[in-house]
Length: 131
Image (cartoon, rainbow, N blue to C red; front, side, top):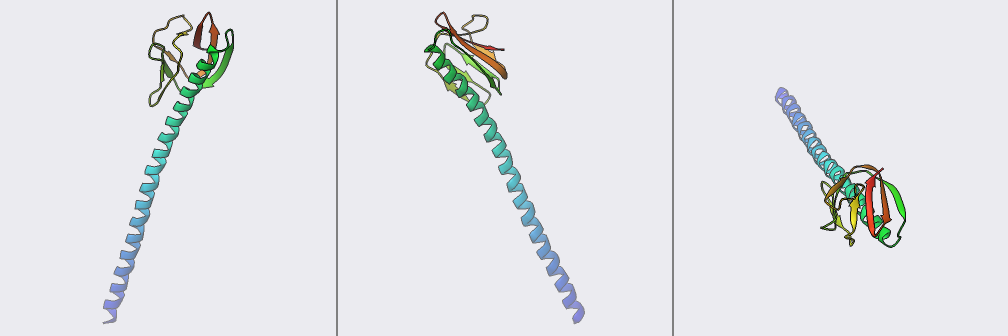
């Protein structure tokens, strides 16, 4: 009769350890999922920040003819002057200015790469270029 109780206690102990282990694995999986979501959210917010930085600078430059502004962006942005829109891979923003061009003088859709950019106001146009 004693032999049966020892086997029963061992089985119960293994079962409890297995349940605790499964709870730990489940908690870790939830943690990993939330960490991935947090990383994606941060990337989206960083892109949105770069977008708004450019849009605010463009708007400010229209009120300061002859002015120039240099700063760094960390994500490539596509500027659509006709649509008054700046877009990245996961975000977009708008600006109220139509007279925008790139460094070649084109007002067609263009891309501003990550890195230092220059925004200048001259001849009634705001020019955006990588430096």
